[in-house]
Length: 128
Image (cartoon, rainbow, N blue to C red; front, side):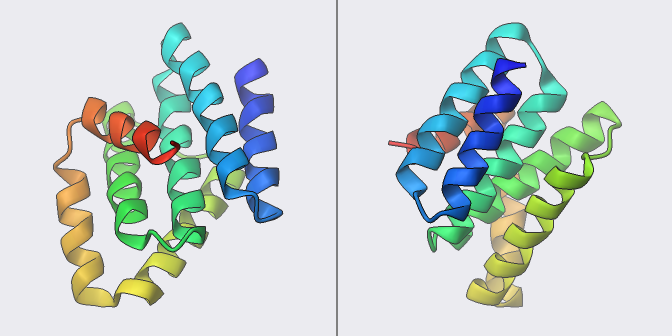
């Protein structure tokens, strides 16, 4: 419950343009999800990180996390909840617009090949 609240606060901070606060709150949320072993929530965490990174004009990094989140979702056989799906679509559209199709596809391939631990470490490093 606390992780969900922190995640929502992080997205609210992002909506207000407070990128640093958003990343810090999402990092706290992710720490809880990792501690309790919630892989479906970790997929959502990656999507949230990606949306904030896309908003912060870090499109390539956002795509890496979107691709890995998609892979994790497929591995788990889950669908994203509607709010996370919206964040995914927003980040994807913004990153695709910023990068263009060829660079987007290249970033997607690289993100999809990341080990989950590497994607998480990348997301957490991006929050600093």
